[in-house]
Image 1 (tube, rainbow, N blue to C red):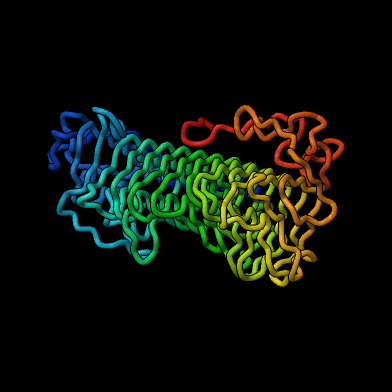
Image 2: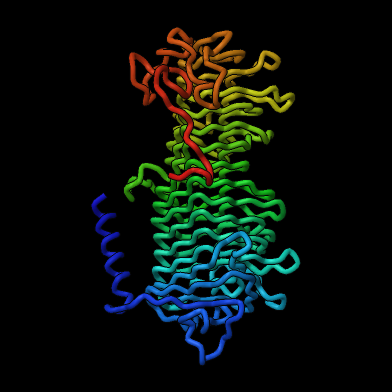
Length: 510
């Protein structure tokens, strides 16, 4: 949009004004055999300093680079770079890696939510009463010790146009990266492991953000086998993309962003073993007022937790995901409480091994949930099996549409599609769905012994695509799908339309 381009140009001009008109780029050095004394200027390996914290004190604002040599460096205080500075290690892994570790006697206070200055982090991008700008940190490892973890690796507050990449971050207490009140962040190709092992008054995350805008976090690997921190915990996003990451954390959600101010957040092409939790029980502001179609657009992810999406969230779009459930016990989309008018669009997803409900309504009011063109295969879930559309009281819902879907249950455990009693049938438009071993649907739906899908090849596509032109899913849908043709197909894929599932996770390049 024009206003966004104009704002970007203005910000770029303002950033240029931060540096002296004739600023010259210089390289400074930190080395294992360096010395932190005033008689050294750091401008050559022979005059290198010994610590990053000292180097950041000496190197002025400007387009300068602090080059850190290989080896393990012990820090007793945060390094605080000035605007324009690049901190570059010799690599994040391998024999020539640059490793920063906290000293054994570094006693970091517990993190504070609002007034933290980054004192408990190896690197702090925060300068009170000023905005830092144009800082890059790359190619190094920041490692705590399981026997002595400080709060985190990188703290950022009021710092814009920052790039953090090719970092290996391990063994911290609360947040490997804590990024707040910033715009134009580029956080990519990092590894974070066990970087949020403790819980305080508010939960941490291996990456923790608050109030970030026009930013992207991508191609990161975020894992843990201990602790309760979430993979990514954020809030107050605007125009932020979280993509091509791998999440596998032991103690919490893959992503949680439960803040009321969320506009234009795109979560796509990730691999995640845990829930995406994005609830706002009340109705947040309309994102269209800020130039966005959605609060959250969650698409083209590979997800394996049956408790897949925790809502509600108005103006949510959940589409083109492959939910291949390996962790049973939840509902795929769960609408928890509050007064929420939507809209919520759930469309063109492939769901496999659904063990409880596909869409489930709890307390409160849920309106305008639209469920189109999904392909859902149920598991034999024993006594946990429920109705596919789990809505049980008509006074708690309105404007639901369930159309053009394929629902398949195993012959060993047929499923009921929904419960029409207690006023539910009057509040849900439910038609043009194909049902295999699924019962209880009103007139206007279709039944078959088989859905007529390929059921061979790569999953989800072409495995769950129509097998032939006479398949019972071809050209039997009603309006509401984005498919072209005589009539839309039923299910996630259109006949003759090639839509291979995109490469996801940190190995992808886009």
